[in-house]
Structures are given as C-alpha cells and as structure tokens.
Length: 461
Image 1: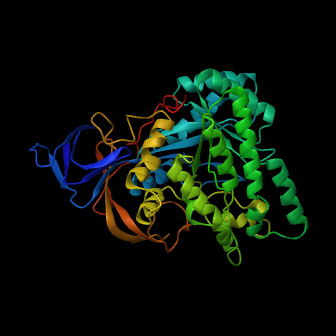
Image 2 (image 1 turned 90 degrees about the vertical axis):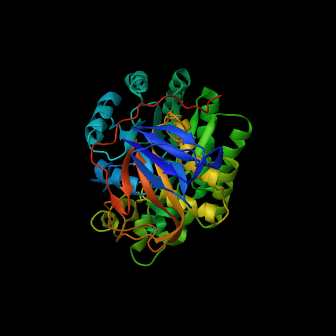
Image 3 (image 1 turned 30 degrees about the horizontal axis):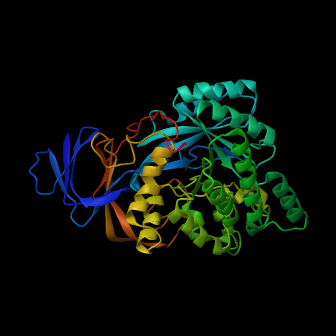
C-alpha cells in the first residue's frame, strides 16, 4: 500500500523543508515538491505539522531481572507504549548472568522479544563475566548484529567489573570495532556510603541520591575514559547525569578521542527534590545514577547543544510503586532501580525546542539520527529520505497534553512526570510503512516489530 503525506514540514537533522513524503510498502519512496501530482492509495494532510523520522531509544530494559523482581513492561507492552510516543525502534539489553555464555544470553533475549514486539528492536549485550570464552564470543555477537557491550563500574557482586576486566574487554573492542558502553559510578565507594547511611538509621529514598554523589560519577567517567585511551577503544557513557561526568567527556572529545555520551529525560527535568518527596513517594524516582540537584540540568542542556552529549535515551526500566518499589520500604538500597519513560521521550525533548534549549533539527538528531548512526542503523533508520525504512511520525507541534499514569500505555502504576503539561504531541506513527498510531488509537499488532541487525558505530575516527 502507498501513502502520501502532504503539506507537512519535513525535519531531518540536516535541515527542514516543505515536502510531501511518499511511502511505498515498507520504505520511503520519494520526497516530492509540494503541489507535484502523485498517486497514492491513501493521502494524509499534515498541514501545520512536522514529519520526522521515528524515534530510536537505544537504552531500554524490558523484562529485566533486578533485585528479585523484573521490570514491569514486557517487550509487547513496552514497544506498544514506545509506538504511542513516536518511538519506532528500541535497543534493549541482553543481561549475561555470571557463569553463562554471551550467545546463550542472546538466545534467551531473542526468545523474549521475537514475535512479541510492536516496533523494531535490537540488542546490546551486558557483559558481567569477563573471561577468555566471553571475550571470544564478542566476535560471534558482532556477527549476529550485536556490536555494543555494556559494562558496570557499579553494583559490586552483581554486574561490577574490575579495571582489569574492563581493560581486557576494551582491547577486544579495539580489535573488532565494537563499542563499549559504560555505567560509570564508583561502586566500591558507593557501597561504603550506603552501608554507613543504613548503619546510621537513614533508610529513606533520598539517601539513594545522597550516597551516590556526582563526584563519584565524575571519577568513574574519567577512569573509564583513561582506560579507553590506553586501549584505543571507543567508549559510550550511558545515562550521564552529572556536570562532573560531562566535564570529563567534554575534555576527552576536545582531544579527538572516540568518547560519546547519552543523557536521559529524567536528568533534564527531575531532580534530587523528587527523591526527597514526603513519605515513601521518593521511591518512584530511584534510578542509577540518581537524580541530581537542579543546577546540573543547565549543564546537560548545554552539553546537548554542543554535542558533548550526543544522544537522549530513556533507560526505561519501570517498576510498579506498589509491590515492587515498596520492597525497599525502610531500606533504600532494596528499592528496584529504574523509572518508566519510553512513551514520553520524544515529547519531553520537544519541550526543549519550545523553551529554546535546542533547535527542531537538534531534537530530531538526538532522538533519532544520532542513535541510528551511533549504533549502526543509518541510513536505514533515523532519516526521512528515499530508501529509508518508512518509520515516520507526523507530529503536531501546537497540540497540548498532560502526562498521567491514567492515560499512559506503559505497564506501570505511576508516571515519573505526573501532571507535566506539554506542548506538542504525536499525531500519526508509521512503523516500516504500517500505520500503528492514528486518530488517537492503536492500529499496530504484536509481532510486527523485527530484529534489527546492526553495523558498527559510524562516528569512529
């Protein structure tokens, strides 16, 4: 079936212009000068609206085990919610348990996702067990379309990797062209601060933020950068939250090092004050790294403008307040870490356009184009251009909405952005040419989403 989207403003990372977009089957067939006669099975009038590439969220955790429970969204519910928010591709994390192989882990995550996703999906691999076998298996993962590997400087006894293990994995990444993704917090020091707080009877959710100070994120980020410099490995810092960490990334990038970083909407809009909400309410906002004092937000927006922060992902890892977050009542260290957000990323970033923090083109760049290039999906995805997948969003920049758990589509019982009033809203969403959101209704289906085999990072020098 062919679809012609007429009278819209096409926005790519490289610029904006009036054009009609012709979709034929699963791909964009042409960009047409407005007024030029084109035949199509369906014509959609997008006057007054933007036509942008579908969002790409390269940091989600569907069905992720954590602390005796697992994140509330399945691949079905999570990707459906993503579609509602204008995200047409996610890249999730396959989590290697210690003692298991990378390939068996990848198979397990395929069994969770394959046939269950509403939009397209890919995988990163979490390496929690660095040894000769797993390092060799990195090559097989790359051949299978998974070429980014996440490691942790936090969570001793669970995911934590020593500097020596990180160095070995980075050496393999340098050899293969893979990208190492790093959760950069000094977990050894943090565990001491957590133990001291609990020993002093301090168990409220705000202690999660106070025991993970920004200096320890900055220190770990600097250390990861130095290890990457020694090995020549590409490095991607995930969910950067603190000005100290951004300073380290900026300094490395200024020297030409292959260092990249993402931040998340929660660090742009929420703060330590939310963790300190009365009672146990702050548990809703427990994630790692934690929310920071508000003064960090201006640094992050500046980093997005200067491209020292290249991507905005969600780190979508939802746990219900009832039954799941409440596992940490009285002991903040037992609160499952993570917040929901996959449905609202595109809209929240548009508020940066509304407020003059970023341009429309930069909005598209950090939400779709750079993620596609950083993780080997461009020009198949992340751009409105002939030949690209028809992952297309018609966006109404003047519509208004209020975020609420009562109306969102994520399988979680609260919203981290409850009551936020936004300007701009997704109108229509196409995933590979199929209309999945239109007229305020879901038209997609489970199993439409396909696995995306990814190439190497296109920003490497």
